[in-house]
Amino acid sequence: MKQVPLRWGIAWLLVAASVLNYLDRTALGVASSHIKDELHLNASQYATVISSFLAAYTLSYAFGGILVDRLGTRRSVLITLTWWSAANMAHALVRNMGDLMLFRFLLGLGEAMFYPAAMRAIAEWFQPKDRSKPVGMILAGASLGALLAPVIVGTMMATPGIGWRGAFVATGGLGFLLLPAWLLLFHPPDRHPRITPAERTYVSEGADAAKTRRQWGVRDVLVQPRAWILVVARALTDASWFLLMFWLVLYLQRARGFTDLMVAAYAWIPYATADVGAIFGGWLSARLILRGMPIVTARRRCMLGFASLMVLTLAGFLVPLNAPFLALALFSVATFGHMAWGTNQLTLHSDLFPEERVATIMGITGAAGAIGGIIAGQLMGGLVDRMGTYLPVFITTACLHPLAATIVYCSLRKGGREWETEAADDLSAPRAGQPLGGVE
Image: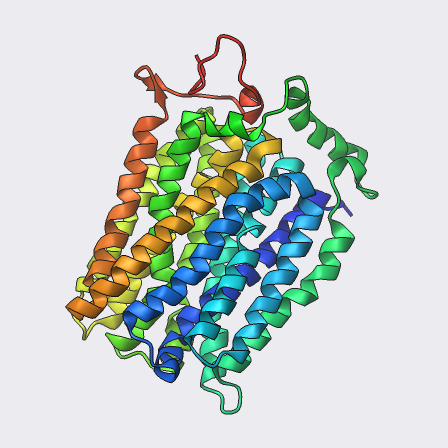
């Protein structure tokens, strides 16, 4: 029987961790109606609680990427998985808004470092042409976690004797079950005790070119215009996604009358379509690349198309209140578009930057995304309280992705022609005579 390559086993472990990462963070959005009532929070206070998570997420993402590049992937995932699982379980101890903000802050500190570590693992084990598939799988895992949250948390909230506190303990405890598998399976490719000669050759072919050029420092990342294109795009689109993650279920309950059982039965659907989008987005760009389309061109064309689907969030809001399932269908198509966008957006990090700095650039853009989420969340909380409607939330989610896609599509060009690269190896260090913005 043919042996499954180690890199795919590692990819599936990262998918499992991604599921738990989003399951734990999304639990608050599912339980928000109960928590708001029990702690007597208005929309602005709820937005402040969300911001405490995102503030920690920003700090952790900003410095976590650099820390990952120093600690290495194996230790980084071990630390982040342990931290966020414990922090999520601690939510059961909440007695007031201050407690909730504290535990959300601790959760944000732990969760953010996972994705730079995961992208570094993919860059270590996969060649550039193959990376969009495992990245898509990891994003699909995130959507699966968000999908499972309404089912698991909603069911537990409706079960006497468990409630939202028990749901946080149960979902957080799952992370500790994953730790032994991670320690057993993951090692760097050059030191893995069970790597086959064929897989060692595959991995080394993707790394040889980068080894011939000098290594990048953090400053080399920051002076790249393409880094700031990614920063702006992620700040916009992560803000939109965080709004959906933390406000959509609350909107369905408060504005469209969803009960806990209805949340468990139906609120997972937008995240299921997001799963499909994550996989499809990676598949489509990989398919275009195999047909000969340059890597960056394939990514940005896919991103432009998928981002346009997010306008359907506003259409979903405008659907009459007596047609909740039509609204849910429109939200589901929009989340498909977001995750298909996200697969290509995150893969661009490893397309445009060398392996040793993938976690760094991921950390920088992730911090920007969290800052965008804080700003959007605070603005929306105040507007919802003052206006008495969730309309500002859905106008924002409808506009930010198309704006980001336009920036990416138009900016990743050089002198009126497309800014192309065969692989990240070709950009692994600034070369003499080459401008710091593209390939001449």
